[in-house]
Amino acid sequence: MVKESLARTIVGIIGNVISFGLFFSPAPTFYKIIKKKSVEEFKSDPYLATLLNCACWVFYGMPFVHPNSTLVVTINSVGFVFEIGYITIFYIYATNKGRKKIRIVLLIEIIFFVVVVLITMFALHGTTQRSLVVGIICDIFNIMMYTSPLTIMRKVIKTKSVKYMPFWLSLMNFLNGLSWTAYAILPPFDIYVLISNGIGAISGLFQLILYACYYFRKGENIEDDTKNDDLEMKRTIIREISISNGIGEAK
Image (cartoon, rainbow, N blue to C red):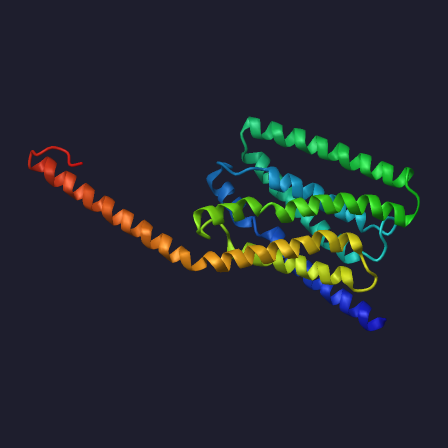
């Protein structure tokens, strides 16, 4: 029993480290935003969604909702702080329309979270009932987060190129899902952490398989782009020579 508890703690710590990497991964994007003093075409939606996701998981890990979930609370608390920072930066450099959207979404999220907390604390009794309701809500948000790359996967299949699928993000998603799945399986068993992270591990695995299938085509795409650039350069030279000789613009 002691060995299983120790193993679960170690796996949970590994999961915390990997999740920290995921939360930190948008930092270069926000460095660009600060440097350019503009959010450009970036969207605040993923960070607003992750903020609510982290808040729900922190609440889920509370002793009065789901005991023995300290490591779930620690990493999602860190994630919550990260997302607050990202959203603050986004708000500072967003347009008036973008700021208005952030305020509205945050208000909706706060109302939703308060309603969940009030129902959990006053309408539900015992950790079993509370874990069920809050766990299902957390799983819904987590599954949405893990399956969001499906649009990118569809683009990879359509273009037969991995240009728009970051390998390291796919790998980290897979490892994150895998580590938290292992954490959930070890005693005490946690079905709610298992469901969403199990789906996340499968989603990450599919992303890696797809990446492997189309990786070598990336070189072909680059080569094709190079050929197109060379062809365009030749056409430009021909046009310039033709104009200088008074022939007219070449087609």
